[in-house]
Structures are given as C-alpha cells and as structure tokens.
Amino acid sequence: MASIHKPPVFRVPLVQLAVLLPLCLVAWLFDQTTAYSLLLGGLICVIPNAYFASYAFRYTGARAAPLIARAFFWGETGKFLLTIVGFGAVFLLVKPLDVLALFSAYGVMVPVQWIVTARLVKR
Image 1 (tube, helix red, strand yellow):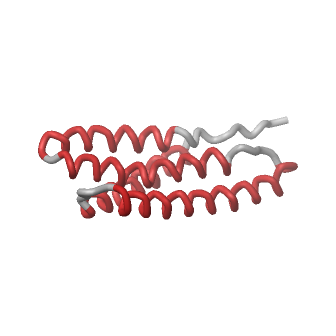
Image 2: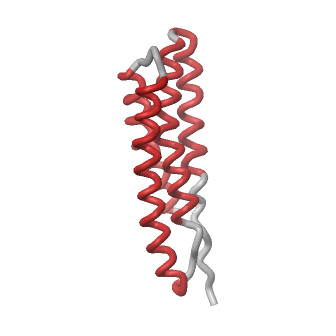
C-alpha cells in the first residue's frame, strides 16, 4: 500500500525569507525606513502563508478528507485575518513608513510563493 507523504510546505516560507532578508540588508545600506518597510511588507505575506501551510497540511489520507477540507477553510480564514491585522498594525504603529516599499515587498513575495510552490509540485 502506497503512502502519501506530506508536502514540504515549509520550504516556501524559508525561500521567501531567503529572498527577503538579503533585499532588506541591501536596502538598509541606503535607507533604514525603506529597509524595515520592506521587511514588514514581506513578513505580512510570509507569516500568514506559513500559518496556512501549517494548518491546512496537518492531515493526510482519504479518511481524513473532512478534516482536510475543514483545515483548509480555517487555514485560509486565519491567513486572511493575519494579513488584515498585519497591515492594520503596521499602518497604525509604524511611523515613519515607506508605503511603496511595504506593498512592493508584499507584491514580490506573492510570485515567489507561486514559483516555489510550482517547483515543489513538479517534484
């Protein structure tokens, strides 16, 4: 009997961080506000994605199908709420803020997630 292994979903946030952190370090050399805005924007994407991955992929097997469906629903709900809270907290608490850098980092992390996920699925 063949066994379905859990996908290596935690590689995605690790790769995202591997892209984000050097970008922030380079930006730090030029402007600290831009650097921490980049970091915060990237983390607003990475942390909810990691939460979703940990929540949604905790079950395997056909017998766990109802649990899997429920986990995906609650994982996506949590991811959405964490993203909203992340942006809200940053806009309320962080001054000064480079809004363009914040949204740029978030926008870069999304395609990085897609590309890494697509490569993992190919394997």
